[in-house]
Image 1 (cartoon, helix red, strand yellow):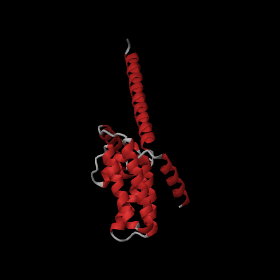
Image 2 (cartoon, rainbow, N blue to C red):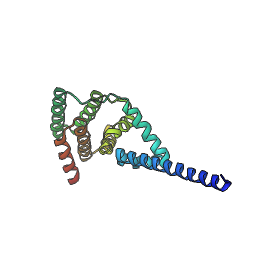
Image 3 (tube, rainbow, N blue to C red):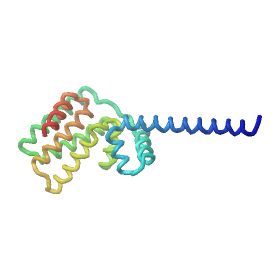
Image 4 (cartoon, rainbow, N blue to C red):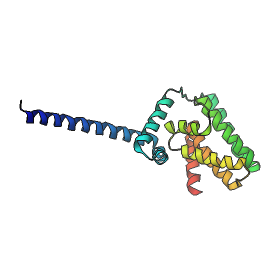
Length: 189
């Protein structure tokens, strides 16, 4: 075999390896974009790098896959839904108390399903793996809850927080009727 033939074979092998590597990276990126949706964009903005963002999301996905996330029993589901309806009714007379209870109920259902209830950013990150379309609603509702705790949230702000929390609650409780209602009201708001 001549030197030029060996060089040609080496070049072809290198090009093939690079091509396969690019294909694998693109497939991984596509999978993560599809899985995380808007959260993928958020990670890009936070890290400033596709590689760092994807590494962060992959690490998060791997961590959450080790949790024992389970659906709630039908009895527990019924209790959660009844509690949610009571909280919504309470909002009319006591918006501040209802918002506090909504936040507590979200944490309770997360714990019941198997999510560790650590600090807020960790809870939101964990939720983003399985519920990427509502995690921003959770963040928005929590931000309003923080303002509420400081006495800086209006009743309209608290109403918006309840709508945000309802979207997450509907996802976690697998309650599609609440989800449709939340989406319709959010679109009108």
